[in-house]
Amino acid sequence: MKNLSGLPAGTIDTLLFDLDGTLIDLSPKATRLFYLRAFSRFRPLFNPLSFFLSFKTSMKALLANRSDRFNHDVFLEHMARCGRTTPDAVDRLVSEMIEKDFRSLKPYFTPVARARDTVCLAKALGYRLAIVTNPVFPARTVLYRLDWAGLDAADFFWITHSQNMNRTKPGVAFYTELLARLALDPARCLMIGNSPEEDLPARDAGIRTFLVQTPLSARAIRKSLADKRLDACGGYDDLMEWMRKEKEPPS
Image 1: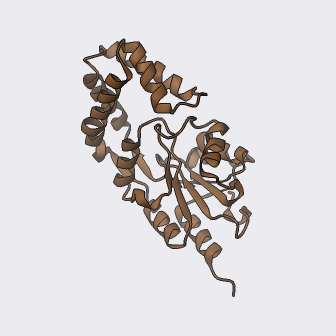
Image 2 (image 1 turned 135 degrees about the vertical axis):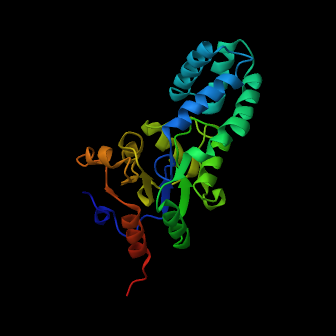
Image 3 (image 1 turned 90 degrees about the vertical axis):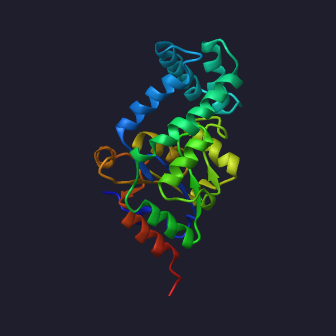
């Protein structure tokens, strides 16, 4: 185990929370239903096979984005090219899919135990909070998931999504872009996530890392204990205890 005593005392004032698997879990059935409903939503432009191939190609282009365009725009342009239509036409279908299809998946999302308590405590203690999820989907999908996790988007000074970021996890460039965009000092930040693959690269950008152990993440975290990019890991109760000690007035 790597405990929080290894984190520098009294220096961290900004907590960067991952979302999926960290604050909210989703059933595998949700992904299957999402694609089935997406097939139907995009039927005016794609048959099921062409939609699957076009979506896969467009997501690959988004993940490989190295331009100054937002990830969402890259996705729309590639989908439009595949469907021989316009980005605006694709964007209208994406918006419909989010509001009518994605929202219907709410029953398949479950808040991670003690996550909301941790966010509420962090806010009460005066930490600055940001949602640092992989920005591959539009803002509305992130805001809905936050709501389903029982969290208020207004409590976070920044929320990543495909419409405000140019890079994606697990690249270090995602974290350097985040730091530059928000003018953050990496030494004063703590990345809180559940995925060694996606969240530990934050350490290469100078951000300390904490992996939350849940029933779904415990095995992957155990395999990463020797990774030098991992500063600490544990449950949310461990993280809350550390936060309280950090904010205790000196005696």
